[in-house]
Length: 321
Ligand code: DGY
Image (cartoon, rainbow, N blue to C red; front, top):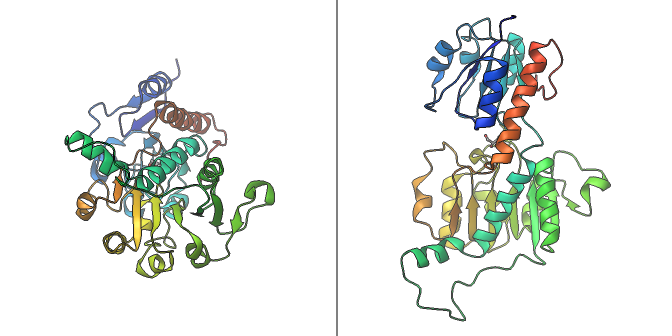
């Protein structure tokens, strides 16, 4: 019997994915689901043909250069790629794959959950009930902001941005967007294109960040850009924490410049900027964008499809480099 390829699986994945990986590969699992640092990844990858990793493991050039020669491919269980130095991977001849498409809808759903929760003061209402502090219905209690007929600005009109726009149409929002390039009309579906991010910000009563973390988007939402937003705007982020200057956002939430924010991702997560914990007008979630069983299974199967292709000497369907 031919020997199976050896694959390091860095995190505990959903059962069905683990079962497929165990059947197809000589899989080195991490049942305890401890988070591996670079030295652990390098030592556990000895003798491996590939690594199935997550965005929790970082692969800068200095880690990639220390990976054993035997490792030919890195299949990341994520659509985001900011944890891998793609140039260095390419230079080393390492194949990198990701998991596009399958998490589009679940992430857009969480964007809407954040938009609604921030606009309708879900955190304050929930807390009131849990603390047994609700005196009963009142005409002026916890008044929020209506979504309908408001302008939603979407930064980054890729797959997830467009799925957010689809949902926003159901809420009768007017959709504006900025993207590196303008979309063709059949993808725009009536959304209004802004050539510059600043032009988008000026009209965005709601702002959804859906752009990847890159050197260009680092701290995109800083003091100067927040100042461009209409007073009382609401901001949500399901992309990456690095897009937001936390101090600037918190200042604006305290001053009332921004009415509210909804955040699923944080710079330096899981150690989030502590200031968010005491702000009533921010609704926070622990990076749940793709967290449905269906989506996480689909992400895992994509990783396996990509690795299977690599081991069969074929082009993996989601090859990035
Ligand atoms: C992704 O797929 O990029 C998710 O945010 C998980 O890292």
